[in-house]
Amino acid sequence: MSTRPKPVNGMALIAVLWVVAALSLMLSALTHTVRGEIRQVSDAQARTQASALGDAAIYIVLQRITSAPEDRPKQSAMLVVPFNGVSIGVRVTPANGLIDINNAPPDLFRQMLMFSGKGDVQAQEIAAQIVAYRSRKDFFGKPLGFSASEDLLRVPGFDFDLYAKVAPLVTAEIPTGGSGKVNPMAAPLPVLELLTGGNKAAASSIFRARESGIPGTDMSALDPQHVAEMASTAVYSVRAEVPNGAGSSYFFERAVILGNPGPKGIPWQTIRMGLWSGPAD
Image (cartoon, rainbow, N blue to C red; front, side, top):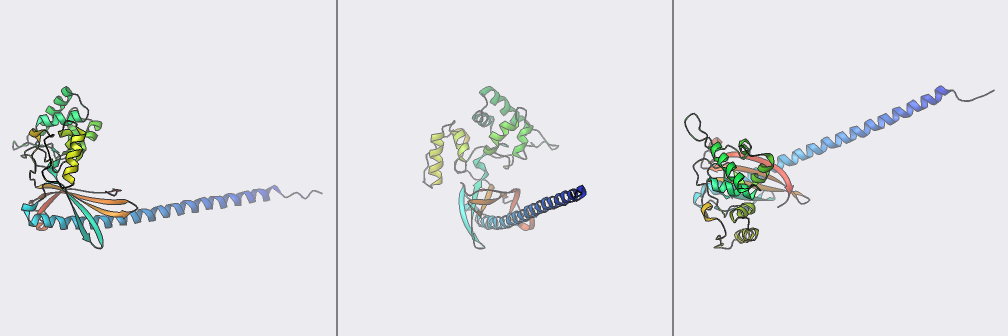
């Protein structure tokens, strides 16, 4: 007489194996989730710590600047602040090293747009639209200007591709009423290239000489009608770099107007803040 196992026993074994496999998958997913949450908490903690350290270093630098207004830097300067056992680099950059979209003349806009790939005729048309947009008046007849560089996207002729090219060159943080000229001692390399008519070699030479601290840097290659060498401003970008290990850093930045009292009597007003991570400078 046959003694073959009953089919139900085989089905039960398969069911048990399926349950074990499902539990293994659930455990694996749970472990992955927990590890991810731990990593997120760790990252959040690191960002919070970097923000606190960076902001503390920025406050120390701003206190130095505001205590001696005559010594406000007129060019980009790097300061090292030892704080809580960490050496934090703080770069102070006058905002007038960028193209001031609230005050710059149409011809500088035209050059900027041609530098960004537009033809002469189209560049002139968009430049006129920029001036028209910023000249809109409020209820009291005061020009509205631009409150942020992103407002350029509201200008006819501006699209996201054009804005992506222009954004690193401009600032909207200088109030209406400025000279509209660029301080070449504070200008980043792309702005120097623009002001030399696209002469990369001349712009690089100016940039290297300036950064090395060589006095009497030759600025003759720059368009003289759009530059104001060593011009002063009350608007600064102050960026702290907090090392994060493995060649990366957290960067905390404040854009401030010096002399405009902020909360609790602080002698500056913050108009923008940001925190991000990236390769160490």
